[in-house]
Image (cartoon, rainbow, N blue to C red; front, side, top):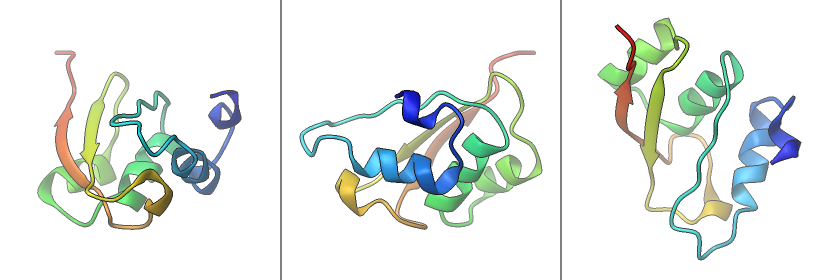
Length: 88
């Protein structure tokens, strides 16, 4: 989505809320600080989330899950299911 290229967290979450209800997955590719802020906004505190709070390095991948529909995305409604930094 071109709308998220220079957007901040509220605009990105608004765009995610606009995804079709039937879409089982969405993919967001971005960089810090905005992408890490989106993750921190959507997920409650956890050990993996603490790592992201400290640093979200280049090439990091975070997978979030939620039971909520896209249009109900809000603070702390997602779970950080995976967090990896694939480079050595």
